[in-house]
Each structure stands twice: as C-alpha cells, then as structure tokens.
Length: 400
Image (tube, rainbow, N blue to C red; front, side, top):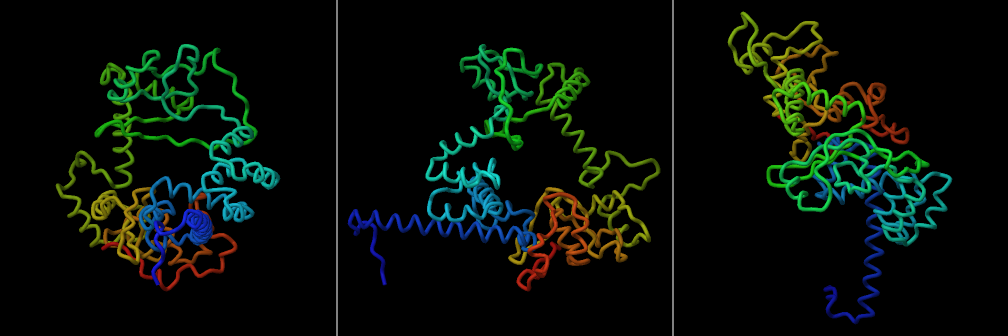
C-alpha cells in the first residue's frame, strides 16, 4: 500500500497531516525521554561499553552535542517532575523550555510556572526564568568593555593572537588583561533567589590551529596565576598568558603522568639497568608480587602504553569504550582475591567500567557502599532488585 505524496494532498489536508505528524513526533519524543530515563537509572550504558550517558548518545544514537544535551537535560527535569509529561505531549512545553524551567522549578511553583510558560517561545520562557532567578554575572569568557562599563566580573584570559587581531578592528578599548576585580563603577547586581548553576569553561576554535580559552577565575586562582607569571618572568619575559599556561600544563602532565604511568622518567636512577618499558613490564609480569598493594611505576607505564591511554572495555557490538576520563588501573583478577599487580593482570579502565567489573566480582549491593561521587551514585532503590547484568549484555569484554 503506497502512501500519498505530500505534493498530491490538498492544502487543508496537508495542514491536517502536519498537525498529526507534529503530535506523533512529540509523543515519540516523550517516549524517548522515558526510555532514556530508565536506561540512565540502570546505568545500562556502562554495561554495553560506554563511559557515560553523554558518550552513548553521541556514539551509539548518533545525536549531536546540542541534541544530546537538550534530551538529557529534559529527561532529568522530567524525572524530577513527572507532571511535565502531559505538557510535553500536547505541545505546551518543548525540550528547550523544559530545560530552562528546570533551573527554577520546585514542588511549590511547578503548577504556576507550567501555566505561565505554556505555549511560550524560548525567549519568553528565558525571560520568565530570569525574572525568578536573576543573572548576576556574564557568561564565562573575555568580552570587550566600553568606557562606560569598565568593570570586569571575575578574571578572564587573553585571546590568542588571531582573535586579538580580529577584535582590534572593532570599537572599544585596548585588549584587557588580568586586572583587579570590579570597580566602583560597576552596576549593582540583584542577588539571586535560587542558586545559579556554575557555567562551564569553553575552548572555541578561532583558526585551524588556534583556540580561545574562555574561563572565569576566582580570586585565589587569579593570584596563583599572577604568581606563576612572575616566577616565569625570565623564561616568558612578555608575560604571555598562553605561554604561561602551556608551561603550567606541561609541568602538570609530567607530574601526574608519571603517577599514572603515562609519562616515563627522563633518566634512569643510578645503577639502574638500561631496559625498555616493554622488557621491564614483561619481567615484572613474570614475577607476581606477593602481598604488595602498590603497582610499580614501570608496570603502570607498560599497561598505559599497551592500552593506548584509553579504557580497554569492549562492548557487545565490538566497539571499544576508549574513554580517557578518570582512568584507573583495574586488576583482571581482583587484588583482594589474590590477583597480582602484573602487566598481564592489569588493564586501563574508566571509573564507570572499573565499577562495573567490581560489581560483577563482588555484587552491586556491596559496591554501592564504596561509590565516591554522584556520577558513580548507587543504584536507585527502585531498581535495587534488578539483576545487575542481563544475558544480552554479558557479551561485554575487555580489549586484548
């Protein structure tokens, strides 16, 4: 049975069909949010090889950043306020307006705000939100200031050379640098009635090989940055912030990279044998440590190099997690069960997959007591009796 093409429909029929399709799209969208909520509650994205729900939406569902962000935000607001399901289905609210309202919704005002935001545009709902929760600071980053408003809220970093050249053609004063806090000429800010979410720093591409870093610093961090500029005044005589930050980042990578095993020491200690990390790692693997709780640095480096500095978990579809966030060394045979700290018994795992392996080894109820932050939060009580792994997800494995 072939469907009629849009070109063959009368205008009034076409309009009716569009209304039907819009309603169907909203219903599918809400069903998607409900399924996504359940998927997130079970942390099923970990079991099939993804480090986070965000990574799953991008890599498995092929949503782009904006689409994934709107759906995850709307899902979490809908989880807190199930009453929003009907307004989403009939079009009174959409993903964007739900995400905006989520900043100020409470059990006491949800009914009133729902009525005031019904069928409103994003701009109108945004105005409604800021009328309840005032904005006290501009978006994080560097902005050109006019002479009538010379104050800078917080500290900002200079733009790269390419962006400074472009900004020089625009009206306004010379490029701002790290300076003191707000002056007396700053406009008074209204205190917010509710806590305002912290804005994330951004790195924006300005050319093929340059990025602009937009970040807000507190007073202590600004003072530390000024101190570092002074300490590097001989090496970076012009005080260029990009050069100062690069030096700080390189020092931090060297320090923490050695601890994680991502960076090899520059020179061997006196009397040490001249051996490669691969040879030393093989030797360490051949001699399992007995009762040792620490992992030798040379073993860490060998494991890091073998796994490429990424999580080694592979999902049932053969795709590897490859997350670089919160990497940990995981024992194939748990150390508490006698597993040695050798190259063959170690692998890199992001925290989510390290916890998944621990749940498989010791049980979910036992591991719920050791979760360290909200991102690794315990299994919701409503799903505490759900089997931690389902047969279809048992195919998950580790990269060889």
